[in-house]
Image (cartoon, rainbow over all chains, first blue to last red; front, side, top):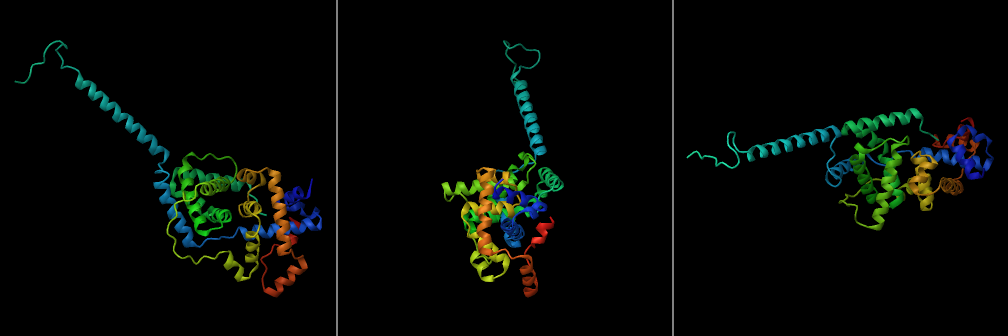
Length: 110
Length: 207
């Protein structure tokens, strides 16, 4: 195991850091300091709010409207029902009135 | 350093599930990760305005993809970092695709301002900003994003061994630039300055 491996193990498991030689122990201390400094917030509240508002706008516009899955399923079911109704109506309208065959003329109201 | 426990990962999974049911529940995930993603985008681009645009586009994609997101047992941030990285690479190939918006003058501090404030955290950030690109990225994902080496390797498109080496080199450089005071020196510094932002070596020794 080389130095990079030993240091990686010590960073993941600080309990074994005491087994490190001094030079690696110092690097582990730098790692601990980095974890503390780099985890601190870097944005102001107004920046966070601005980015959030922009992300929501982009999500609606560029990447499409986000629709929850149940609404999507309900929409699909509704669409299918409407399609069936339209096809059914079209078939009924195309059929001649009861009592006449297709070869007989349908008497007009006049 | 802080590691994600199974309980924390499980809690994050629940947050994601809640956000998949109700978009309003995405807010905690945004609050948790927006600073990390912005810092990463800033590291990749070196431009605060572009970093803000990339961060917004990353979270827009996150909201869009949320219904299809599948939990894989790694922090949600790993996915966000990958999206942000892809957006930056795409911007480099096709500059201008990221929709820049008019930015008002910003009072937020940049690296130049950090250098003037003179505290230890600032000193650390300036030293990190001066690292070579790949080392800076590895350090930020490891210590800012609290990701594991294999997760970082996947994001950076490198091997796990390469990530370990990048981190090792970065820490060696930072040790040289920043120094790593011994416990006694830290105690003196604490007394002299009335406070100490450093993590003492004893913490590492005791685990």
